Length: 231
Image (cartoon, rainbow, N blue to C red):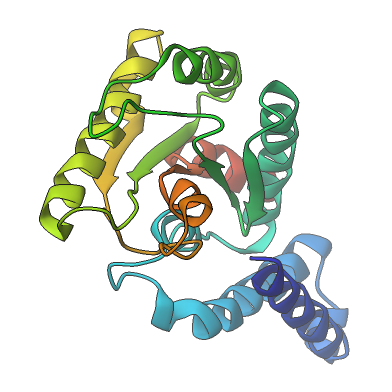
């Protein structure tokens, strides 16, 4: 993830330098320059990452990158996501919070969201940690939240796929039961796909048993950002 963010930043700096040297851009206003550079930057990022998105992998990362708006409006959205990411980190220090593009990738490992073995039932600790996210999610209501469930490789792929789907659905149900609009959520189970560690050790399998969130702008946030960018 760090490499991806570095590539994106480097691309934007390069593009900014190229475009701001053009006479047409020199004569444009700040909003127009931002739109040109942002759109071009988005195209470069998309070209770099496009082959990895939408092929059954990448989960939350693919979802976040797929929602890039670009331009000045994208910058407005990114600023709001910066604030939300900081608040998530404060609320739940054990979570892995990563700002990517104009969204947030949030990974909750077994230290944050633990399930009973071979079940989709949330433990007391898992519920307590999800409770910490509820105020933040409610504060930033103009976002969509995609939930991805994962397992380790123990058992058959078919069994784990079903289990991961059930676990993602359980997380959605719990958060919706705390007052967050169910319409903001979508759930996907990816089973043993996209391991973040080896499945050959107990420690690695623990890391692979996780839930990922992709937090992206909904239509209202996009429209508001576009209006702000046009001022």
